[in-house]
Image 1 (cartoon, helix red, strand yellow):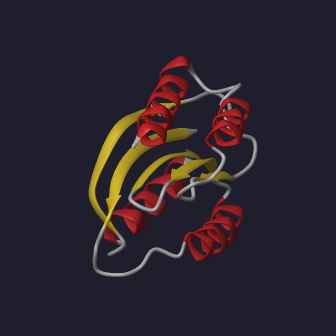
Image 2: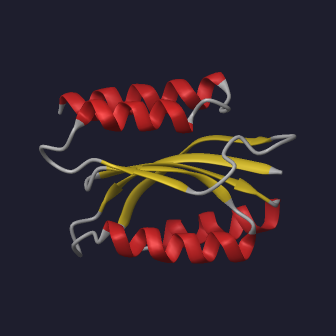
Length: 131
């Protein structure tokens, strides 16, 4: 099983419809056997994709070619014995939203994640929360 973690910025070429991204991602990921976690705040994306190697590679290539993303940077790429995220999940911070509830949701979703993945998401969420 392959796990890729990346970060990207939202491009300015089109408005970001997070609900649409979630709907399409859930459909594609269910079809391809991919699970993971996505943190999106309207300006940045931090995501882990995991599943069969070829499926994760195809998904990552699609993301890299998506005009809504720019500056896609791979943070980690590793083989895993088991899934760290049992089902697709998404945290989304709305301006003025309940940051404490979001941090609790992130912590809950990351319980089974490796220490590096957990630290990356928690650190990113804390920084974005302060922004």
